[in-house]
Length: 350
Image (cartoon, rainbow, N blue to C red; front, top):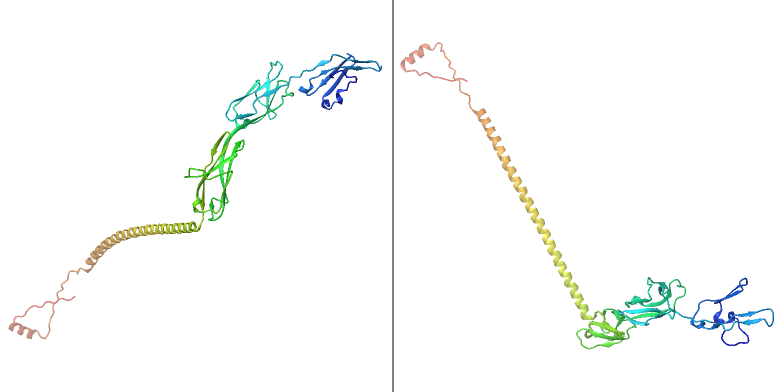
């Protein structure tokens, strides 16, 4: 070790070298090796070899010793970068290295083998970066934390207890945002008003009344910029509002009743119209059927009349002649016939 010390102390007795020192002795080749693990810049010293024999005077120290110079890898980069701004991380060393490098983010290897790592400074780029020489990945450089800064994003407003407030109650509006560093300045605005109505992350209104009703929004700001939220509506739910709601409900019910009545009328009208059309069709069918029946009846009647006429025709009368002979009265008849002209009497006997 450094300095002229009468008594040399074994490295294993130093706390900072504990579990990092290893002695390797080869008696055949008469060689001894000191192996030091996890070397850091603090290990830059002169190291000497001391041989001790069984003889009290048999002690030798190799002077001068070996001077150990440590050249450490380190990442050169700004720790704070602004979002969307290009930044370069460089793996530097005092040694002349021509090999390829390995980059790590949060302990995981990246697919980058150049000495310089280029970032576009997205929010997701925040993290811990280190580098190492290829095939010596077990000896990475100390990690450097990169933090991406950005103005407020996703600014929103929440209302408590609700968006409709009973007149006389208090209401609290809260503003939230995503920013790095977090937004510390908040301003509150009411639409149609030019100046701010409040400040702070929360904005409270006590004894809320109709004059406070409106649309509110907040603006969050940090040193890198600002953003406004969407507006939210806050209204008072007083007695007049209740009457208004009741009136609206009644009006809606009346309109719905009229609509239903109109629908019923239309349905009844269509049914009646359909029934009338069906009755007309039936009448037409009945009328046409009646006429056909009458025509058939007339034809049957004419035929029957013809038959009756034939049956009712009188047969030609047959005249039968008969002769009558009077006995005992012939003389009287003859005498009478002489006196008066007798007429011939015909009679028909059926």
